[in-house]
Length: 192
Image (tube, rainbow, N blue to C red; front, top):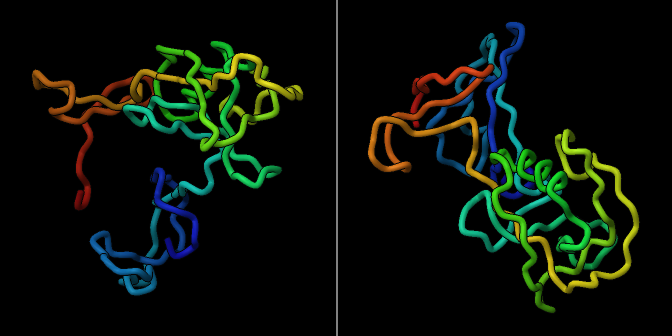
C-alpha cells in the first residue's frame, strides 16, 4: 500500500547468506512500515512480496482464485486489462496460465461471452510450448479480431503444493505443503 502497488498478492520467505537487516514486527498494524521497525539485526531470511499491480495476467469473475475470465495487462489501451479471445488459446496456453497463477493443471477451458462494459480483446495469439513459466514468456502473433465473440474462461485445479489433511472436509485440517516432491506439515513459526 505504501508503494502504491495494490494489495499483497503473495509473499515468500527466502534463505540467504547471513547479512545486515532491519527487524520488523510481525503484528504491526499501521499505515507506515517505518513504524514497525524494532531493531537492527543479522538475518538469513528475507521476504519477497508480489503486489497485485505487478501481475500481468489475472482471472476475473470466477468462483475461486483458480477460475475466471482470463485477462492480460495491456499498455496500449485506454483500459488497463484486455480479455483473451477463445480462438487464440489452447491447452498448452492454459497449462502455462495455470502454472503462473500457482494453480494445478487446467480442468476446464471454455469460451465465455464478454460484454461491452468489460475489457477489450487482447490483440495477440499466444503460442506457448507448455513449459514456459508465464504467458507473456510465450511466443505470440498479432490478431485483429475475435471471430467467436468469446473470451477465454479458464478453471485450473487448486494449488498443487498445499493441502489440508485429517478432516472430512477438503477445506479444514492440518496444513501440508509439497516441496522438492515431498509432503510435510507446515509449522507456524510466528503469529498467523
